[in-house]
Length: 276
Image (cartoon, rainbow, N blue to C red; front, side, top):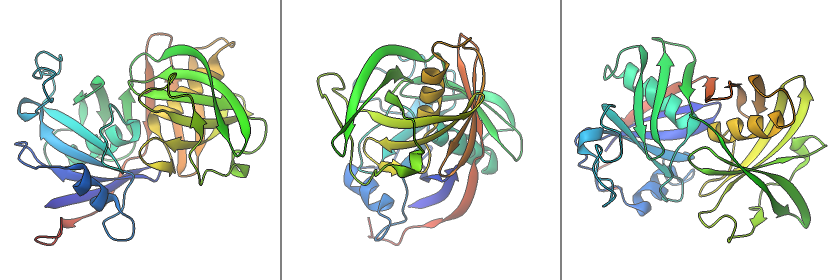
């Protein structure tokens, strides 16, 4: 099994080239690949499969999903093997991989995901920008951590988020355990973000991702905290979000959202025969 390893603000992924959709990618195989001690190590897996070869599990073919305008489908899996709808950092890394591998040209084009088409813009090197689509604000919610209750804003970016503002440095939080939440409010689980304003349209953030635990960054979560912070302000504009793994830029224009940041490929190779 060939692979490429990459990251976006240290949110890291194992990329598996599978253009014809031939890999039997089980949850157990994903978990082994992502294991940081006994595997390659990553927050998730990005399987690169041509959209026309993608099996969407009985939910209709690419045409029925409106995805046939994109050549490549990003099949994203969390570190525990569960399937996720969308990953903002992963989309940027996926786009950089396609260009680096000669499977796409620098420029502007669509990637198919379970959350729909995502338009990327990138050059031969440097940062990648993704049109993340229109955020959907769903009202307030809450999570608890170490006995403390945190209220936040529920935001859908194609996947579920709870963005909680706090008034102390985010580094002070203990995220070694998952925050608790009401499963009736979040039946599919939720990514929980904790953020603090540190300047004009400038935030710091940490995140606990469903299926992966605390990660160094979360692209969709970065947009979610910008949406939450923008509520009650003049809204549209550019937001800088610092995460443990680096810095991302979110642009809100009232109609859609854009995420811009680095996408770095660090290694490539192949697994040993029979290991998976």
